[in-house]
Length: 202
Image (cartoon, rainbow, N blue to C red; front, side, top):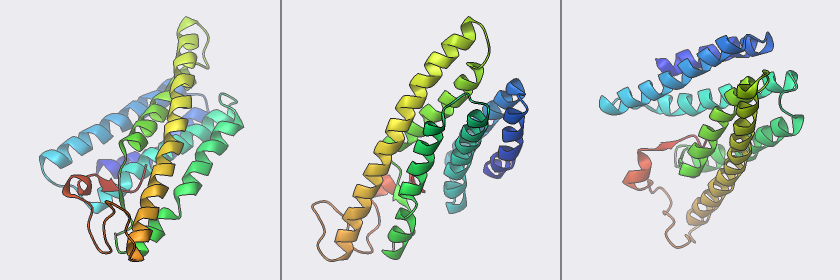
């Protein structure tokens, strides 16, 4: 499974960043991104989506982001506050899964487009910031564009967290017998269009 291969590559990627083998690290990151795209395309084409894949894909994205954050922080390419902001966001949404699971929804929520966009921005930002650590006009341009993606990605990441908590609150109210307008009742499944994208929040 390509998702498993991406997970296995995370510690190797972090090691490459720490020993400043930046081009090899970027190559591995590109491979991980392409394999994620190919895995999703094949799964949809063959109708072979699975709950395991839905969990592994966002987990791999998070681990690559975290590994890059740690490596770039150690190398003083990004400040500590950015690492703290993104780790705090992950901690902020951690209680959602057990709450949703307890309500009988399987511990998953429909993935917001905002969350996916934030993740994509961060996955673009960190390779660019890594390139920005090198001299020359290309390095300067990469640093400027990378910081633009990083700021937008962090903002969208937190915005998605707020939306996930708002959705969780609706489910809790529905479970207590006082569903807000448009909220699903206890035991109800998300609409068909949302079920397809249901997975761990990004």
